[in-house]
Image 1 (tube, helix red, strand yellow):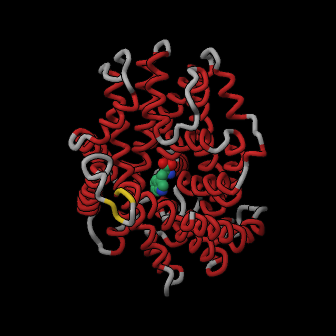
Image 2: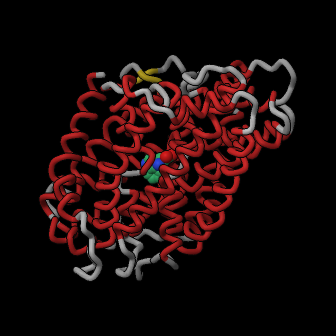
Length: 442
Ligand code: TRP
């Protein structure tokens, strides 16, 4: 079987950006900004993305393209020994994230439908109660979870260029258009400017260890690094792509979308006088309330949840592709079989995730409900450990291969090469080790 490849350079950029741009940007980033001091968090995040985030992203793309393999096969092909463990961690991680990501993906479908059918526009609605009774229902969220997973499976079944690339080329530009429309609405609301100021005028005294920690974990999650997703997408690249430039574009799109999503949420939240620090409920509880009071709110609300859906879908496709690539490369399974089996198992993992918000809330493992446990294991354990090992591997073990990939054998100039090497060897590992330790004791 010859390896599939992207059909065009732009196709790869959009697919990698589609992987990165997800719930992390539109749902998580704005509420983290609200909880962590506004613009000070935004600035901290930008600094970390441009240094450690870019370092990890470029290393993953380079490892994937050099090896032309899934994460496990890539570490085995480039070095072997203990290193494929890093790849296994990534494959398992993709799968576990998918097990709760698709549940939340299902909520975005549900909320798009509920915006349009009037459920969320009924006068006097208690949005918090509506949300908690929806997620706690033992049946309804599972139906939407199944629909979301079916969409993911449908795209991945078609393969790299006819499925993943094609859908990213449709969904990503649509998402950008929706973003612009929603920002235009949000910033022209009366009182929006207080939100813009909170969001963009930093008060540096608000930066502390917790803020840095939150920003660094968010950078990993949002850029989809530390678990082999960019290794997998990089493995479908041919030799001609300029990797440092691709890294800059993907990071630019991911960060741009996060910043713009905040520019929808923060002005709207301030204009209607609700608290910006509401946490994870900001998107599903606070915003529907804002849409209800806004002229044209039903349509803008539906557009917002559709945007969230598209962002989530292009990410879940990439989450599924990581273990699918592993089964196809290493166990010589057909794409069809791999996608159905893995999609099916991920759906099943989603069932206890969803029920853990309702009838199974009291059933805890290590003191956490199932969904929170999966989130903890993946973002606080596997992604930092995977990212740490990957940076050490790239910087110390296979640096000549990295140098060759980043410069296309010396034919493109990459002036930051020595800086990148130093970030890989020392700065990124030290910073990640710190998140890991803080995450465990915190
Ligand atoms: N980056 C995604 C988001 O912001 C989430 C994510 C983390 C992810 N790791 C991933 C997506 C790996 C695809 C592949 O929502």
